Length: 277
Image 1 (cartoon, one colour):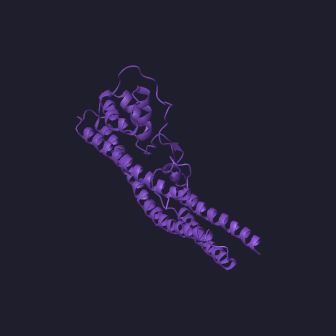
Image 2 (tube, one colour):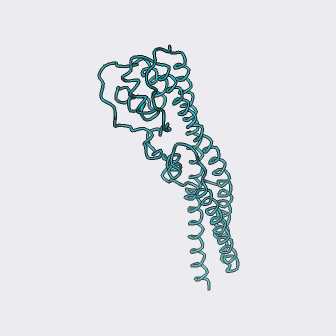
Image 3 (tube, one colour):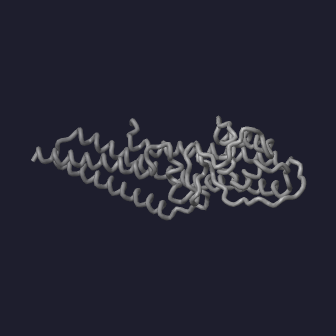
């Protein structure tokens, strides 16, 4: 059977989740490489420690709010423009090569590096790497802690994606069965003019719609009881994950498609019965 428009949403959702998983794992590898580089850097004299609060996850071209703070302020630098190498430039250069070029390839300006450092690490660390000339033990420790937090934040998203994939796959199987049942009913509809047969088909379609409603209720309960401890706001996680689709809730959209086809065929049956009687 040729896949229907309604069926496409869950398939596309699973593809999105798989692609996001690959992206996040590659970003984790990038942060591990950068962390390994930082551990090799020489420690020197002390200065004040740098704050490391709030580590967001990159949004791959689409910023997502993280407790009121954008993941990455793409296109707008909060740093002072710099036309020459300053501060701990060699560390900034390695960040660009090992991390930024993985998350946002093709952005090479000093302003974009500052913005990316602020978004992924913190504004404090970005400023420290821009203005400090000594890589102190405190700065090194703050940087390592924030890199670890950035890596672990992605692990939280990956765990949510794993649970989301399982839920979508189960509901896709149910919707596939409903789609197949609808197609069988539609075929039988084209083969009969008997009122009793049409009434039976009508009742079968009502059963299909009831099962669609059950899928919707299950999905809505999942959304209402969503458990997510990652850096992306709870209400934004599906918008973030399905940003490349034309729907934010693919399972609900697909279920609506099946139910709508069923309702339309019921109306056709009603009209045919009226002409026969």
